[in-house]
Amino acid sequence: MNIPEHRKAIDRLDAQIVRVLNERTKHVLAIGEIKLKAGEEIYAPHRERAVLQRLCRLNQGPVTNDQLRAVYREIMSSALALEKSMTIAYLGPEATFTHQAAIRRFGSSLRYAAQKTIADVFTEVSKNRADYGVVPVENSTEGVVTHTLDMFVDSDLKVVSQIVLPVQQCLLSNSPRAKIRKLFAHPQSLAQCRGWVQNHLPRVEIIETSSNARSAELAAKEKFTAAIAGMLAAEKYGLRVLEQDIQDNAANATRFLVLGRQCSPPTGQDRTSLMISITDKVGALHHALAAFRRYRINMTKIESRPSKRKAWEYFFFIDCDGHFQDRKVANAIRLLGEHCNFVKVLGSYPNTE
Image 1 (cartoon, helix red, strand yellow):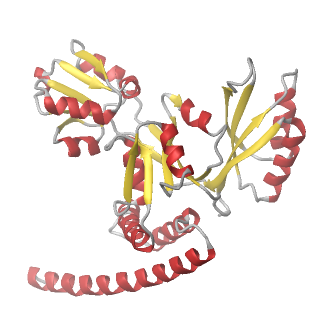
Image 2: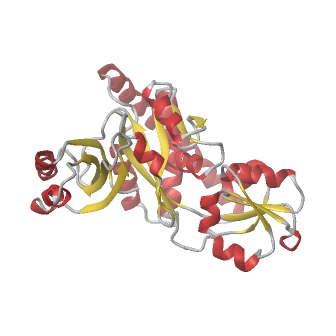
């Protein structure tokens, strides 16, 4: 086939794609109407995960699975927007990694509302001014985001999904690297890139900022300055990417939680997040955690936080494999309750992206 023949075939296939895409959307809208009448949540992370996994199994290339997921993410996003006018609150400002994570999960067709603090994200969802919220919970290099954990103490919101975003830190500037005299960076981003900065910009003045987006905004306004931020910030503020992947740890990633008002149903590959409080006595934590061993449940994470209600009183945040409706997880939670002052299920959600 020559080029005109290939183009004619592409035009024919595009016409078929448009027709089938609209047919698919009609079915999605019909499901949305049934859900709304039943009072169910429109967004279903368990179903989304199943669809993407099935499509990847069907994929024979040359389109990669990552590319296929990106295309279908936007198809699903446009369908969600047609089903219901949805708002996603996230820890802002715009063009931060949290914003990027939210778009990665929900696509670009929904309304996004940047919030100044993690507490504001919880408030927006709790007061029904947002359908879902996206907040960071831990970074593979810098550890846990304590503000997020603390908010769960008094919140009834549930974790309905997680997003694991590889963090690609970049050096952004409209000046040549040799002429950079000042570097704007958020403290956490700077910590993730400290080795690179010391090796490549040893004499540059470093100014800490409130966010990656703010760093990019300042660098865009002042000559001979640069910012550490992501690609989304470079696009928003019109900066050139001088260097990519300047983070010291190549496996640097941040985990985000999607907040909602109802738990996700089981998928067979789930993670459950719990919060417990125990009596301050010898062996209390050991006896409590024995529940996971008894029922052979893999506990993947534990963090402690001061209760802020009484001196030396702590809450423990636990992640484990399984869904709280699974029999052995439910049994373990019941046994936990016998050794704890209280046990709170923060949510069960798909354990993979």
